[in-house]
Image (cartoon, rainbow, N blue to C red; front, side, top):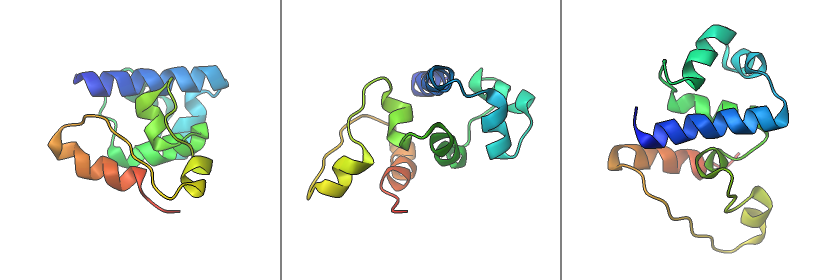
Length: 107
């Protein structure tokens, strides 16, 4: 398993546990059973990029927070009040465009 994926899954698990949210709650939001979601968190099943937004929403965090936890670089309020923001972190080129589209998505 790639290091970034391993860290991402660990962050999701820690945020979920700290908030007292069960795997069942996230599994229900993703439209899957708890066993399959458990496999995702344990790295035995692939976490789809399309799941990141749903997981973040369920945990009441921004998608970027899933990658940077426990550090919080920006939040929605900061974005709304800022004329310009800058975010820097490394991802492989094949994942860059997908991640950027998730982070910059306007709701």
